[in-house]
Image (cartoon, rainbow, N blue to C red; front, side, top):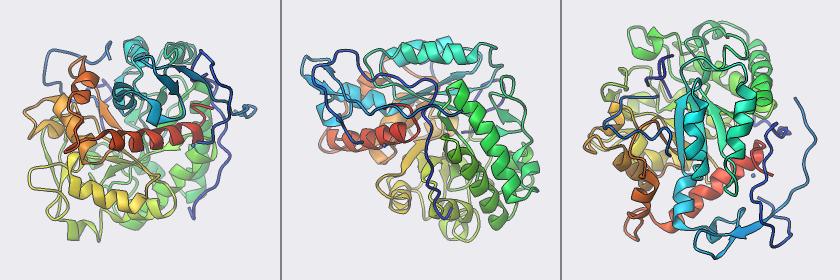
Length: 405
């Protein structure tokens, strides 16, 4: 995701992921004891705001608990097939808010949203304690995944409670081991604060005169350089149990600022020789959580449809990252995401989920967005089976990175 600081909007590594400081119980009413094996903000288009609504530790013993479902049926937290439609939809939606206003996410957590993402502002000194309290508010719901924009330079939300990082452009001149060490050190501090996922690294190309390059957010202007540094950064984060997210597929380097207008990038055949190369190599190295931008490319996306809700583009990405990979949208509150859906964030969420993403990220929109999506579940569109698949992936990533037991 790409937002300003005000909040406006290897070969494969095998790591032992340390459980975060906020290991949570998934439910509180135990009916059956068993063991389950499972692993921005842009411009708002309306007046309703989603905000307010919607180190190493011992590895815990895996547990499973059963609690009453919303409609009274047995509910197994680790088995999405036992969930209601509403619970499934809520898990696929992540909400964002300024890091300076963690309290704005309380209702989202209480409603069972799958995760929260921190954007601009200044993080409070008691950030870790506030994260702990936020997670506790999830109650009987599956604990939320805590994510933050942590690229370094202009886009680094936790700089005030950890320390400032150099920009990606600067780090791109370093050796790969130095980039990995830097990411690991910073990632360890993130994990100690209770943050599970970094919306980084940026795998876009640094193209002078374009949005990403103007903010020094890309490692290199060459595909090979961008790939090496992105893989090195992702490896450092993953080595300490923080989930890296490669962004902004299929490459934002040649686009304008999609907070304000659609991002038009070169045709697919051109991207395959340049902008897509860093993503291809990072995915081949085993980093399969990918953020999709609101970018249009001839031959890759349908005409007038951004990649974030393009069935054609998302099918290509899914085939590449495999059935266990995680696809996350950039903020669906951004103007580029709202073109073609009458500037309705709820429609953008539905369309993206229907097209193939696992996680729909939104920073502003109607407070009843979960309910709106639930009413649109149908055999001819977004189905319950689709949602079960998405939630199964989300739960697997939560377990892998210590969000749930």
